[in-house]
Length: 622
View 1 (cartoon, rainbow, N blue to C red):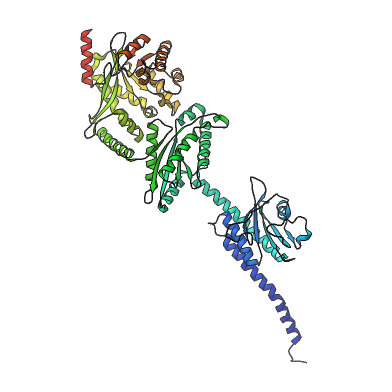
View 2 (cartoon, rainbow, N blue to C red):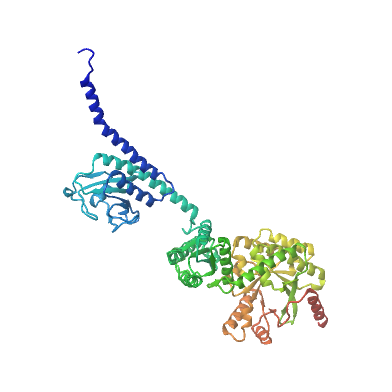
């Protein structure tokens, strides 16, 4: 009838709305579920395991599941391993009871990993592939996780209700797997970035910056002690110079692996730079010292593989103990100082930082500061003495070695072994060397023709020789003092050639071409003395004092001295025996045919004025 409401049409619309409401509610629920997963997966601070555990937990909580297990492919073994689970397998957080591994292709999960296809099994009793885990379930849904077109894992869920999983579950899990894949990839990239920022590229150990951060963190939270071991390889430069830098890198990698393999569970190892390593232990002094001794013994075992097969490398270790409130840099510095003392005490040993070392450090700092001040004001505190060199057949002086001396106003007499080493360690050796050269050559120049025919030896530090402008600087000082180049000999040890050998060799040739004699000092104690003589223009060698001191009592020392004298004669080199203290040593040197000698038994190092007087008295006698 006209004007009456169309009740049938309205009823149909209402029914349609009621029928679509569950679908709308499901879609809203789906959006909320995906939003929860997105929020979790967008947390960039989480690592891969955190991500997987949260995905498993959310899947159970938001999708009314009984369990959810996530497998990832193990790239080393090539199988699937359970990495996270939520449900009966892990009643405690982040712990899987009886984790299993699956071969690719085995079981429903393995089939998904092999095919890359989703498997929705409504009745596991009818699927021969089904492999029960903790208990038998009747329904299973397994969805692959892809990255760059390959399967990297599987999200798997089982349920005790027959036909529980639907296409709705399937679609949601596919979306969740895609989001998980993106987040795993991002986490892997973040981990790689952190490794690049915190790891040493050569050894894989912590780098310098991360070491300081980790140590400071441990010191700040420690209620006990943190042990710091500073490890330095002994004579590592020889490996680079004689075997190649490739061998050096392989050595560092191998030693780094050894150190890492010795670490206890709480230990941390880092490469500080060059051939220096550091180990951190949450340990007391006794425990740390025992570990350090074990480390020294382990490092020295022969290396294995390639160009370093059979190579032996020792190390020196400095040990310091840190407590809460100390700065990381200070504790590492203490360990470094202790390592330095281990080197000076003979290498291949452990040295604990103590009050004596701290006192020696304070003394060294005072020496360095006062040395700089003395050099700046050209003080005569640091001067040169001359130790005569005698021709044994003629029985008279033919020259002298100039030796540095320092009469400190407060500390008294400081030996060159102390202040020259301090100058080398602190970068002041060039200025000190320039000061000493100026003193020596000015004095020789002032003596003029009176010293004609005499040769004066000056010591050259390896650090001086490696400096680009060293030769020009030396020749300029000689020219200014008016000293003939033939009156000068430069004494060098083999260590002068262990840095940049090309640069050092060039400097030696330039000195020889200028008419300055080159003398190889401490002969017989180096690594390749004969090779050094054959490849560089040396005119003389000096027998190290340790062999001269033992020449009478020790057969080996006698053999070395006799051999060096014979070798020098065959090569046409001057040979000088150092450290002569007793008449019997002098008699044996004469017997062996050694032409030159010096030492306290002949004459100690004396001031320039005393040397000149001695020379004049000798001239009057002849």
